[in-house]
Length: 103
Image 1: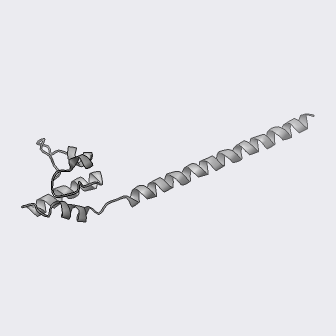
Image 2 (image 1 turned 90 degrees about the vertical axis):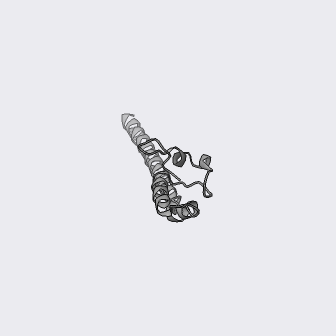
Image 3 (image 1 turned 30 degrees about the vertical axis):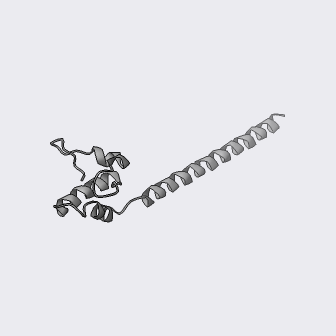
């Protein structure tokens, strides 16, 4: 009788272990997919900043500041000015002097 109980506990523990391994594999697949999708969502900062700064009087400075903001936020508001509500990170970044950093 004790041998059959031991065998039942052993089979039950194998079943539980198998389920845990499947759950761990599924979790790992989901996390790797989310990493790939976030990497795929990277925008082309050069092109986005060129569009944003095309009407600026000092384009080099505009593109440099925009590039820094874009690299940190992965976002550039559309148009040449305004639309800051589209990208809150971009809109809230300031210089050491407290002025808005991003054009």
